[in-house]
Image 1 (cartoon, rainbow, N blue to C red):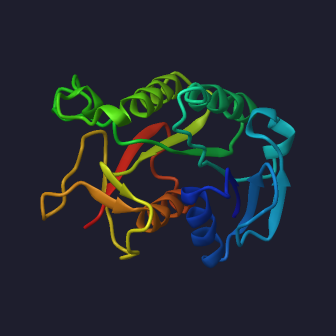
Image 2 (cartoon, rainbow, N blue to C red):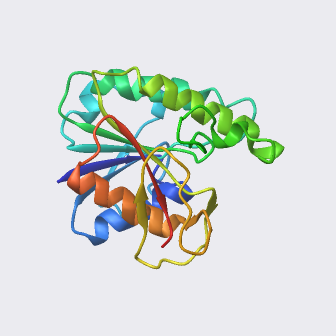
Image 3 (tube, rainbow, N blue to C red):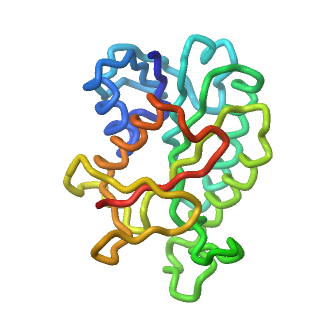
Length: 209
């Protein structure tokens, strides 16, 4: 299986890349500069300049782009459109590193986590941008996409337990009543989905056991 990880040098991207390499997959790191990952192959290109020709040989493309700066938040949508346009009408699957803010907190799916009164204000801009990103992705019937939301507490340096609970559109709590997952366990879930491909054109979520 050939996999491309876009923004592979980022915190999430690097661990996703490492997980894929460790499983013996054929991995290409898509980066703007030097490849700082374990991926044996490199495509040096800005995400906004990616074309269909760049991605045609891959079975799966993982979009690990993320930004938190106010002036670059719109890039969540613009970069995703670039990737969707490049993959439109192909068999290549697109997996997106999403956010937790867009997860629903009621069975009717009318209230999202970032819309609740206690949601931290400092995370609101990013959550709003990623929720918009998901809304736009849902309109792309021409792309085999999967949006993977982490738990509410997404821990960059959390331990790799090797276990996680796979959930859907609603915020899931584990047996301890927590919504938490490490980047390392999230990477496991992401590569599991890349290999299995069970959730095409769906949003899924993951939480630590």
